[in-house]
Image (tube, rainbow, N blue to C red):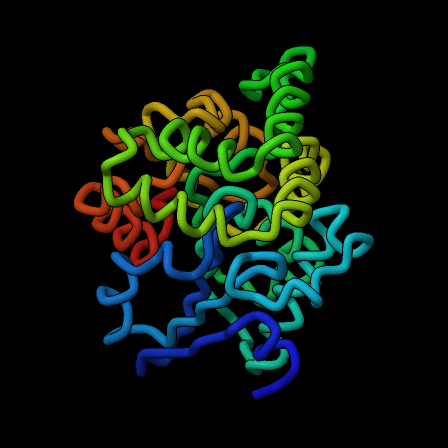
Length: 270
């Protein structure tokens, strides 16, 4: 195992000829895909990994300068693909990892046959003629709560993000992975993500994109999926699912897994 693979806890499972890469979002790790993976291993070579800074990774590897923008993570993704000698893959990115995949595809479109976005947003802050869902004041309060008492913030944020009560398995699972992130790393990554803006890059993304979204998502309003569809440089398709929450693959797997499998398997009918 190479250095990049070891640092990211890379796992490669399944015996298919085609490669599919599953990338998790903020506050989670590769376990967030546990409902989807069993449906892929017979047909695909499945690549799972943890973003640097995620709970299971070594916090010593987290470089606060490297990960001040999404590009640091995009470079990590490209390094993983290179180390695994991946020539082409289907990339499934949840939340921030959707935009990480999009950025990586701009520099190396040849490595990606399609991008599947789940709960994706190019910008979380509202702007002139753009509704991202948050005002700066909202984000400042969120960051202050993280600073003041990270454990208490995790307990409050998890049910809001997942869309359920504290007793649900999905909320407990997200609470666990969120709390596993070192607080100073979580704050740094959270600030970087929520203040990010990659709208200017969307027109450069030429790889086909499948945009999948919950009806109700605390972090990503439904109009954002239409914004992506309208501004991406290549073919794209949107599907809004009859479920709630920012982590629907955890909270509503019976709805989300078949939708993801369909978008993974089939192309966009133009």
